[in-house]
Image (cartoon, rainbow, N blue to C red; front, side, top):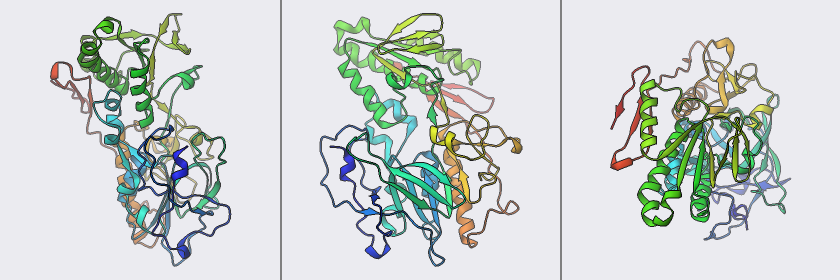
Length: 442
């Protein structure tokens, strides 16, 4: 049975404070942290509490606190919610995931270096008001559309693939809306990617990789497509796992275990030449086979490159960057280059009142003259912190709009990035890049 059936309503909300009951939908407490992060049934099922139903959240009344609705529970959205003052705003989060994933450590969970719970944090801990305050809620749901004219978000509950459960459709009214829906894996229209590849963006993706290592002993070839930071990190982690653990325990198959990293150009192409050369040397030393090529097609047990080369695999990990998600593409909002939601210097969506966008799903419109910021956790975190501070100031001032004269613009200063190429021979191989000065620490 799906864990959806175990969702319950906040126990501390008085009946007089709940939304009017008409068409029901599930209200999910974010503090009820799931013991399993994938869509599979959990082994130890929590006790089933009474499931409450409620109708759409209507607009706030003049004597009530203004409502900030946050779409998404990623780095940007969670940092925003953490920084918002619950004494000023009622906070409502709509997301199909009731926890935040610490994505920089996700690759380490695939091979058991870290446990899955180590990289996930419940939303109720990030912003306790969501589980305590009467006017603050968390909805385990997807946003389907936005009615900016009426300040309304249209949503439907997550059914987790249960065909016997119809999703409840409902609306949530907002005073301030923050779109932080993240991004979507870029497949470049290659047939078969969605059906056969694992994207390594959620905890359940890491679980699938870890399970396949146990179940697919006959297919011991792991292919990683994409030579960016995530692909390089995962290749290094998996190679370490093979060199240190698998080859010692399964000596009869040690010569057949391989890791192949496929990249169209150079790995870590945005880095300094010295760093690319160093990473290439270390990956090769740890047993990773580097192949330059472009994936043309993906089949159930093999991928086909543009030159006709067929590469069989037991595990295929797709890590070729990100692009706008379908919901972002469908929204009738100004767009930045690359299809992201366009924002100005104050992270506002132009020509739409009281709507902001932060994180991977946002980008500066061309009129600002600014370049689109990279889809990094540190960018999303700082945007969330900046917007929380600005909204708190607006709320303190009586809920007025952002004043371009009084509110400082958002500026991002890159403090450098840090990646690992594995832990070969008990040494952590680190790659740093600080502006134009790059160095390596063994």
